[in-house]
Image (cartoon, rainbow, N blue to C red; front, top):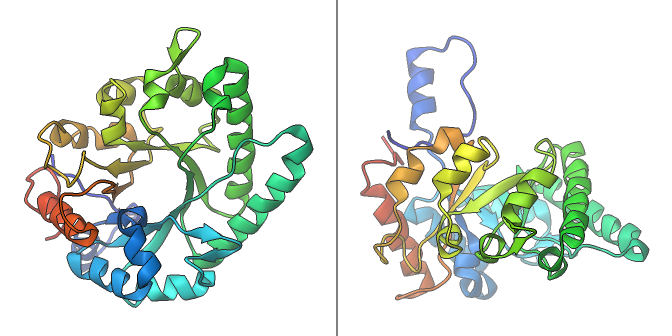
Length: 285
């Protein structure tokens, strides 16, 4: 089975040309944290290089005060699109607030969501959780209630809200169950989806396929990642995971490179070249 991340589902009868065009529209994106220093130095040149590599969209990691990488939302979207990239998602977030800080934190989210709606993103993902979520089940429940509330706000703006894991969610247990399992069970699927990081779940000692079986449909996004460049470690079994994409519910794949054997841009290029060479993932016609 080849892996295709499609922007939309086909509805009704379409002409042969329309079907061919839809089939040709492949979506593999890049998390811009992979090139964070380059984005800070020259965002335009960096996005140009990313587009030329063959990535189809980006997921940002540079939000602050209503702007993306210091740019107004529409300006950043236009910069991406001028380089052949869609701006589909973002990583950002806030720690779970105390009762006294709840209104202030929700106001922060209102500004954040409005900015990302103006840029036309499809999802906002919080890529971390503070110590409160790991120390007790009560603390984790607070986080899940908070995420449900943020997800409800995002839904109202037509944006999906999600959570991105690292390894600790799998290696830490509360009352005999991994933190990640609790999160899947305590969040409302209509309000919170999960962006599964394929590398960190392995580092946390768990198997993605087991989670697809137990919680089908919850993993709407994947971070396609390895220890460094994709395929370099030899310990990632991407093929078996990709074969279960539909069961997982995955719609988009986002490459992320956090550690490198080369300059970051070169590592990102090698990573997409690795994907292009695999027979289980269909990037292009």
